[in-house]
Image (cartoon, rainbow, N blue to C red; front, side, top):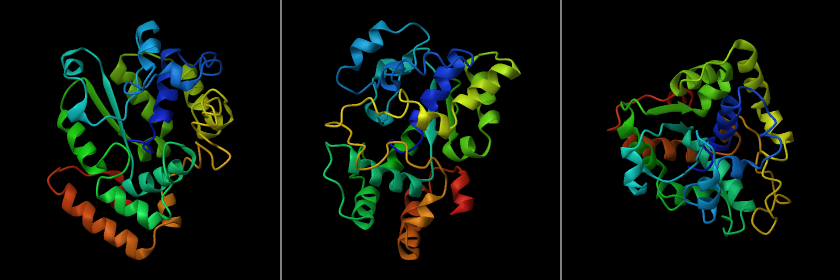
Length: 247
């Protein structure tokens, strides 16, 4: 879903594909390097891509193309503390012009927990894709893991994809995929997108790139209210996530 770190993962995967060489990442817009499966116009880009292709999506598992699950395609699913997702999406709605921005965080929070935010219920999204957690084609990672150990995470991703990079190449991937590098890269910070679609005069697409920023936005009451809903909706998943210990 939006706000989970998808664009960060796109940058990492492109750099892994090119063994740390950032030429493509600095000359081709990120939405062309990794077109969005569900976006109008992406089919043209996807059809012209060289294998292996990196294709992005925010779609929930239950409406994804069934043919995809019969293919040999590998899936990397990025997750994030939903409280941070709330904050990230709240600011995103202010710059994406197809939205009527929420009046305040409280209003957006209520829409989020009711599954009325972009791409539906965060809880159902997680539970849907986690049905594949034991599939060898499926790899899941959290934003928090990327934040805490970017290099180690990249090594794990390389192993999953079958890419053998030496230490120097991995160092280049790490260096070029930091939040600072992405924010300064005009091909990665979405500044090339027309302002009538994404108006970054109202805020940055790449805002902070940190974990735990929700603590600067949620009231104690909002946090406790969200925790109650989270516990109820996630009780059957039988998984533990990094943010559950930090919340």
